[in-house]
Length: 145
Image (tube, rainbow, N blue to C red; front, side, top):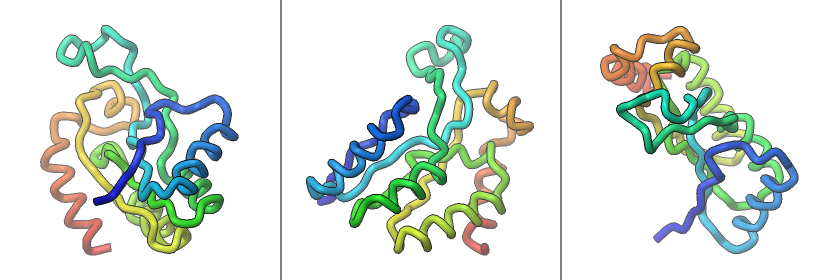
């Protein structure tokens, strides 16, 4: 059995608190921490289909945050839960995930999925309506890369 605890979904304003949190998990013997891969939030009440699940942000960039935390921890693993893959350029995700896995000594796992947040897709120049087909293609490309 593995034990883990997520980083809070929105960014702590104090980066020292983030480091202390990860260090506490590492020291206590936790196996992993995770965070989501959202880029932008959507103000509460603006999506009638998701009134209870709207995150405003700001959000940590998982690649940047986990790179930092991997440098200040010894054994803790890091995973995205989940990276909104169809909103990201596939080759960039492949490069960043591979580098993070390498630089952390294999302590990174990439979890991917789709999102309900149409505003996030629009802001990133992506079409939310083809996200299912897009993620299938992206996973194939990620495996090849």
